[in-house]
Image 1 (cartoon, rainbow, N blue to C red):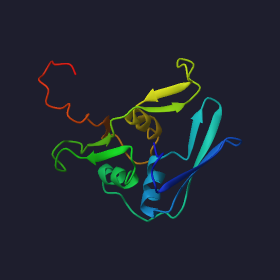
Image 2 (image 1 turned 30 degrees about the horizontal axis):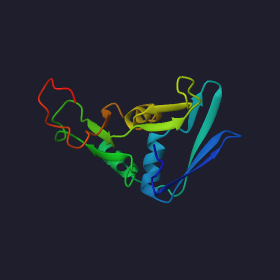
Image 3 (image 1 turned 180 degrees about the vertical axis):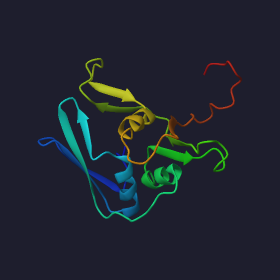
Length: 158
């Protein structure tokens, strides 16, 4: 999800296991602390997640602001938008839109000849932000449209 983000560096210790996310952007770190859990569990393995770097004292006013700050300069991110003016709907919601590409990574997947999982960034976001301390009930993750594919008549397959 954050691979390629020029402001973020990872250190994964597979012996403990533990992951440290290093970033010198205090505002981005404040957002990461709200979005990422302090620990992720897979079966009987618990992996602590640590954010290393300065943390700005900032209260995010909306999920749109939060995601735009956290994903600034991230190549996987397209944009985060709120489709209506605040208060128009009963719940103010936003769309976190990721680039239109397939993400592949090794995860010992026996259903794949190479042991890879092929998925979309929107699916990864749903899983890793599921335990966020920030209220994300009004956030929807999606994938950007392929350039030049919009505008086809209804019922026409690509």
